[in-house]
Structure formats: structure tokens, C-alpha cells
Image (cartoon, rainbow, N blue to C red; front, side, top):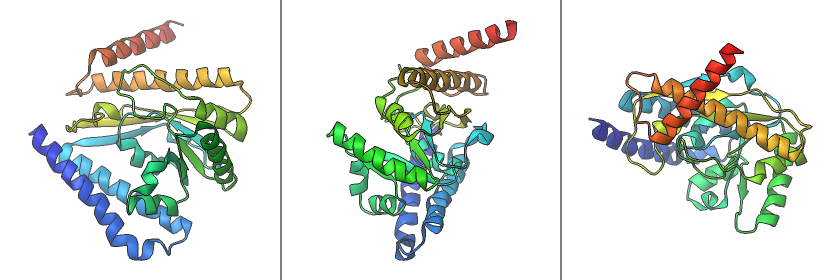
Length: 267
């Protein structure tokens, strides 16, 4: 049954995104920015509904009150395709930092360009970084929330983190708050796998890191907050009935979360 539901959802997922892009194209490119932002939000809502109905996967957001309304950086853990569209619904006016190659995909790339997201060419690091900072500064001035995946690519749950310098450079140059976001989506939408597991995808929005830290202080604090919160979300998933598949690396992180909680209670 799990394989059948996963197959059905994967098919419907692609049909849904194509239908939204193709059917709404005649007027989408004539909409103003505020109106255009509603299109991907409707797609996200419909995808969440399909995910819940077909697979049995719900979404729980913790700490929504920590998300800022003004211009800021949203540094989000990246475990699956899920957060690429779902995190958009957590902010008022998103601007993703994404791979330049995505802009070349028919329809999808056109939609992305219309919304003013920030493409980055990873081949030329120096020029790419300068271009990204310049565009990011403009988006912050517009009061938008920049969504960046600090590790640059998807990491499976429990995998050793690898936070890149890009988010630190943005924090220092833009002098704005950074909102860390942890999640456990990779337990239910595994990276590069066919199966989609039922349960509850949990997202935790953490308190903003304010400007003023050094590069080292910021990088250490960002990783500590996100990874620690992810461990807590893995622990919550392990307590669900039934839990999603949990490998040894994830279970080791669960034990660390339990020890931290026990220590916090004793203190």
C-alpha cells in the first residue's frame, strides 16, 4: 500500500505543478508582485492537501511567531524537495537564493524570474557571491525575506552538517537578522528516493540571530541552533505511532536530544 500511495502521489505532484503553471500562464505574467506571490502559495496549499489525503502526511509548524515581517534572512535546513515549496508559505514575501540552472527550466524558470528570486552561478564563486549580495541587498530593502539553504544542497537526516560561508557572508554584509529554521522533512520525503512516508512533517522556526556577531560566532550559533532543533524534531518523530523509518545516524541524534533535555531539566 505504501508503494502504491507513493506512486500515486508522485504522479499527482508533477501533474499538479504542471497544471498550475500551464493553466495560469495566460494571465500570471501580467499580475503585480503581490498577486503573483499568491500563485505558488495556492500550489503549496494544494500540494499539502494532496500529501495528506494520498499519503497521510501532515504538517506542523512550531514557532511561527518567530518569523519576522520585515526584511531578513531565513536560513533553512534542506533535506528534501519538500521545503523548496513549503517554506514559501511560512514567510510574508519570499525571495529564494537558488541555483541558476533552475531558471532555465521551461515554465518553472519563467515563474521564478517573475517573482524576483535570486539565482546564483556556482561555477564562478567570487563573481557569484558579489552578484548574490547585490541582489539580496535590494530584496532586503524591499522588505522581503531571503530564503537560503546554508549547506547549499540537500542533506539526509542525521548526515554530518556542512554549513557554507555564503549565509555568513550575507549576514555580515547585509547587517540584518537571520531566522534559523529546522525541520525533519527528510524522514518522510527521503532524498533521491521514491517512497513517501505518512506521519507529521515538523518545522521549527527559531528565534532570530540579530546582527553584531563575528563570522565565527554567527556560524557556530546558526549550526548549533538548527542542528539541535532538528535533533528534537527527530525525537518527536521517533515517538509518533507509527514512527517513520529511522536509521542509526538519526537514532544517535535522538539520543543526544534526550540527553540535552535531561540535562536542561536537572539544571
